[in-house]
Length: 155
Image (cartoon, rainbow, N blue to C red; front, side, top):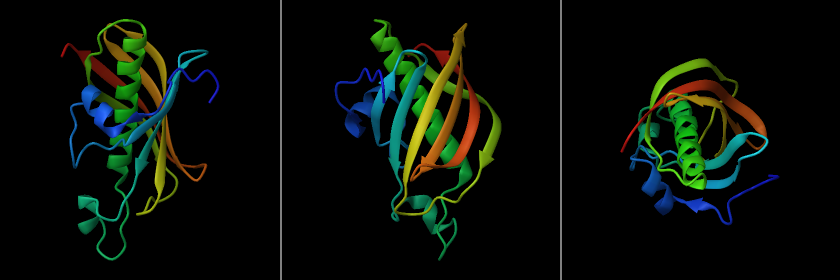
């Protein structure tokens, strides 16, 4: 990615410093790149494994990652973008809560063994509210997308 400001990927242990989520609900394994210009954009990874707890019930014998968890993974990528952008600007990141999901679309199922590439683009921040465009892809093909509104609260 052009303009990547990360000197190295942000790994799972470091992600836990920014996000409050923990297993089994931490749905971003690595941040591989982030840019600040021409727009704030983050690329993250979620490795989808057969031992994910949701696969036992969704669906037995035919495991499919639930769409709502793909949205949550994209929201966590947006949260990482908000934190890392604040840190880059010398500010303290806030805890962001998901407020609204618009235009959610799912175009392909996600199964064990897939690597979900998460992209979050910050459209604007105003009065502690952040608007993001997000998408998830597998092997370069978009599998899900949505627009998110998040509200920041001091930690």
